[in-house]
Every structure is written in structure tokens, then in C-alpha cells.
Image (tube, rainbow, N blue to C red; front, side, top):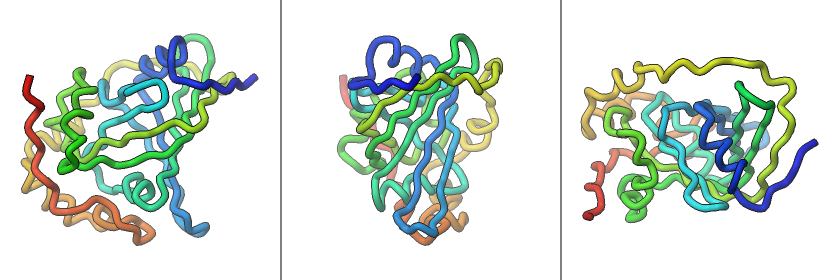
Length: 199
């Protein structure tokens, strides 16, 4: 049976932090708009900021649907599944915001991700989600699958880009600055990566 949680803590927090993969779902307000579902899986790119706030690193890709939807309406659902061990599914329904490189909060937020070097992945934003509803369910229908390792292909592709060339890459893609449905997406040109906070 499903259970509602007030906070992301204890076994619930441990579960989501241990999963190598999670999914994000967003949609525009327009009922005819495109619903977006994305997998996220670079190790170290997800963090629990506090008991009602989570964040993840938004890396380079060929679209920016999540960013566009969050800029328009903020609605987002994150989901984790147990592919190993006891069956479990956790969903965090909430309000999300893309924090871009030129936002003064960006360097401090980046400090929540000590386990990953974002440099080779073309980091373009940090998505911050405030939980409004936290639920888990049985997950009996989720199959057993094993995690071997992260693919190196994303880092291999984007490690050769600097801020200028990354902006040019994004500008060539039709669904980065503007979403599939015409919503404002990633602001371009991409601001320079800020220096890490002192100390």
C-alpha cells in the first residue's frame, strides 16, 4: 500500500540516494502540449538539499524540455524505482526551478554535488525541487535489473567543449532555446561557469 511522507529522511532518503537512475516528468500548461519524461543517471548528480528539497545537475543534451516547462509553470515529478532489493517506488511531486550559471545561488548549490565532476558533462543548470507530496508504493511490477556502471559516452562527447563552443552547440539545436511547443527554454548564450566558492 502507498504511504505519504512528510519529509525526505531516514530510509526514504537512503533509498533515493542509493538509486543509480531516476526519472523526471514535466508538462506545459497547454493541454495539447508535449509531456516530457527524462531519465537521469550520472552518478553523483542528485542531492538531497534538506528534508523537503532535492536538486540535480542538468547536463548538456539535445533538448531543454524540463527547463522550459519549469520556467513556465514549475510542476515536476521525480520517480525512483528499486531494480534490486525489496520492491519500492518513490515519487516526489513538487515545484521545480532551473538555477542557471549566472544565478548567485549557483555556486552554493553546486557544493551539494561533491561526488561528480560536472566539467566534462556540459553543466547548464541545477534543477531545484521543493517537495509538495512525497509518496512511496509497492513496486511489485518493476523487474529486477542490475546496474553495471555509468556510460562514459556523455562525458566523452562534451568534455571537449568550452563555454563558447557549448553555446554554439546549443544554438544549432532547434529545441534548446525554445521547447518543442515554443516555450522559452535554455537562455543563450550560456554564461561562463562561475568560480567555486572560496574556502
